[in-house]
Length: 61
Picture 1 (spheres, helix red, strand yellow):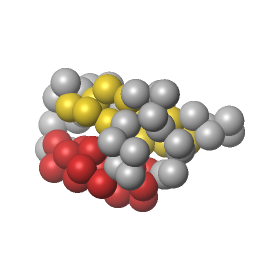
Picture 2 (spheres, rainbow, N blue to C red):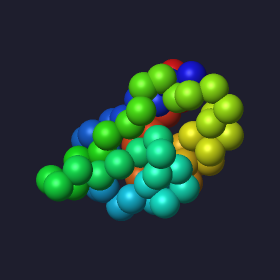
Picture 3 (cartoon, rainbow, N blue to C red):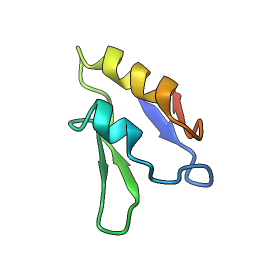
Picture 4 (spheres, rainbow, N blue to C red):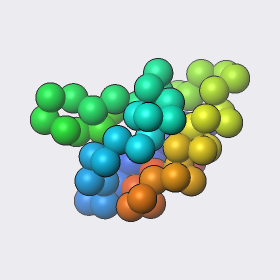
């Protein structure tokens, strides 16, 4: 599984980072980075982060 970020929608709220800090991070410029691909066994948290994104900026690919 992989995650696509729509950077036009992402506001760097950090909800995804709170759910799965090992998969998502905000750099010093508040830009989201994502681990690609999502490691095996971490899919459930990745999907939870996608579902909880307040701007619907994350999608599973």
